[in-house]
Amino acid sequence: METKLKSGVKKEIAIVVLATVAVFLLLSLISFHPNDPNIFSSYTKPASPKNLVGIVGASVSWFLMLSVGIVSYLIPFFLLLITYKIVRGTFSEEARTIIVSFLILIPAISGLISIYRPQMQIYNQQILTGGLLGKQLNGFLVHYFNNVGTLLLLLVLALIGILLVGNFSILAMFNNLKKFLGNFKEKVPTLKPSDEAITFKVTSPLEKQGKKKKHKSTAKPSRFREESKPGDTIVASGVSDSKTSPFSLPSPDLLEDYPQDDKKISRQEMARNAKILEEKLADFGVYGKVTEVCPGPVVTMYEYRPAAGIKISRVVGLANDLAMALRAMSVRVVAPLPEKAAIGIEIPNKNRELVSLKELIQAEEFSETKDPLSFVLGKDVMGKIVLANLAKMPHLLIAGATGTGKSVCINTILASLLFRCHPDNLKLLLIDPKRIELNSYEGIPHLLHPVVTDVKMATNVLRWAVAEMERRYELLADLGVRNIDNYNKALATKTPETSSLEHQPLPFIVIIIDELSDLMM
Image 1 (cartoon, one colour):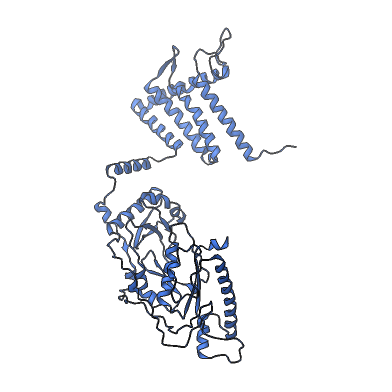
Image 2: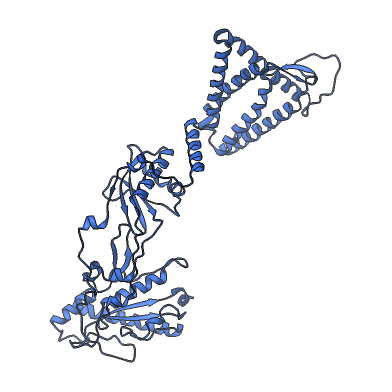
């Protein structure tokens, strides 16, 4: 029963055969001797051929040298090229191009060599440098085009063959040479008048939101001001009805002021980056135009509108090439931008603006929010204040490598909560087994328990937190509400008389654990 060879086996057989033939031809041509016996010529007595691969090699090399001369040395390399294409799996796509380039390049080079040097001497015997093919081709072309026309035609054919076999563009080569010479002449390119004429729109958050009001010197106080009942043990303290609490929210003036230097990116630099983006993408066949630039404190986003027919994936795949062209640490491509027919390309600023916690705490966005567990995160690429509500993310995991800002994030969250929440409305459980990050919060009135540094105590604290959570679920279910805000509002209007549960106002409880993995091990 006949079995069909798998395509992989056929491919391997073709690779082995072609590579063997290429090496055979190369050895036979390298050891070619015109006096070797061969099967194409008659000789009276047997002689031992000097060719490395015997009389067969001597015969093949004699035939090739007679046909195309020294150009026959290119044939083994053509076979090796085909072998390489088969290994990469691209030969089926490029077979026609390779064969056409071979049929053009061999005659063209044979003719050119015949013009330059018709004959050469090897082992005291004269042979045709370009072989019979070069001699006959020159005779035919000179009859119709004369010497100059023949030389020009053969040069063009040789160039076409080289372009086909090399699969590269002359224009791209000259462009790269021009850029290389330009970079060599001037390490840091300066803007030409035509570069400065690039037109694009620069937008900022102030233009979109209108002129903002001046920030108040203190954060807006929380709407809860009741006093909590003190206790030495871990007890879920409620919100008392007392309105005369000695506690007042801290002022943002306690935070340090940082002078804001003029580190904003200049319009000239934005124009230079926009031009580099357009030119670099055009080098890869992606054409388009930068239509808008949105400078931010840390990164600047360039809105790039590609030409019709350009796939977004092509721009995304060139992020690393753009970063190298702009000498940037990284480039992020946002494709596509929401509600826009454009692609966002984010480039880090060379001079980054400092974003201070005091500036964020004093911002109107933070002071006017009604969510008691809101906290600031920083600014986005447009320079807008970024807020988040901890109530909407009851389980928050902050992860990252060393030095990426995990501790800064935890301290920012805690500071945001302390600047807006009264101790009666917010209770904290801080667990810090390494005694490094959270010890500075020891003694604040919001703590349900001193900062926990012992692993066994942390287990007991978390076990109590689970029991307290179950108790609160029962209280919420008894009043038919779903969250603590609605529970406190319902409790303020009416107190259930028939319930067996003890209802009292509930504060928020936030548990912060530094190095959670240490507790899990």
